[in-house]
Image: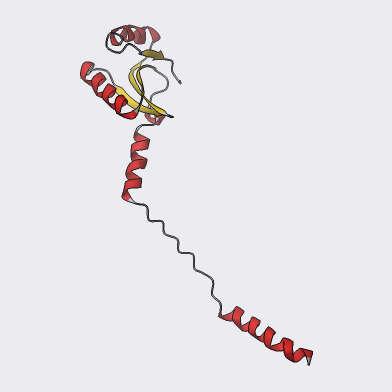
Length: 126
């Protein structure tokens, strides 16, 4: 009698196992275009593109909008000098120049200090 009560339970468990299906693994991540633009903007302001074996002059350190204004001012006042905007958490830096020697960088620093008081010289790799 006891077997007759267990048999329907086992029967149901066996057939529900055969009928059940697992979910298929088709995960396609749809990344919005806005996120791609943000990632590109972040990559353009990182230090990976900088030449780390030369001296740079840090012209500005601060908020994003102020840094962009300082960058455009550097490019306007010193068109021959290469200037870049770099994100250094939590602020932005405006770096100018790729000088081979410290002497050359210090000479240019004296010129830049006339327009940007807080400018300072950065060693290679910093």
